[in-house]
Image (cartoon, rainbow, N blue to C red; front, side):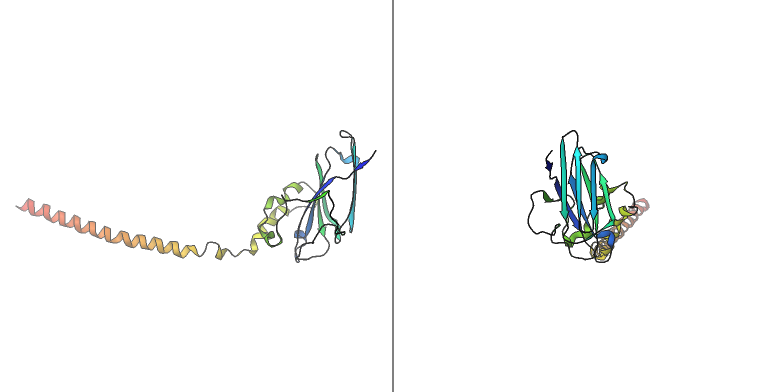
Length: 203
């Protein structure tokens, strides 16, 4: 039976200081393949995948050589009914993105950018937390949900809204000042009316 190369989607994150934020997202689109029918071999320099779908009567095979090394021991795999998802830890901490996934710069038709997960290199700190939702229930992943909260530590909140606070207080003070003369005027009018009523009563 002939082998079919599955579609592969990829995205990445990078960090020069935090290994947890220095990884490759890889999604191998292989529907209807039970765990018993797949073989996945992850090595520092690449991976090999073979899987057979009884319902589709297809055998998928994939052999990738990465642009740079990964750490298989820290990489995670999540198998679903539609695909095999991988979170591959980059071995070298580097703030810069890999220029490409594969060692060979030649373009391959089966490899595509995963735009659902991709963020630009300079916007990584703003990546939403749900980037990690698909990896829930995998071993060795506690605390991942908190990464999004940590990402906000690099944001200077004083520039985002704190500057508006003094202006708001000034507005409130101004409105209070505006109200005071009106109140005083009302008091004077009331006093004048009381004096007039008193004069009428005396007459």
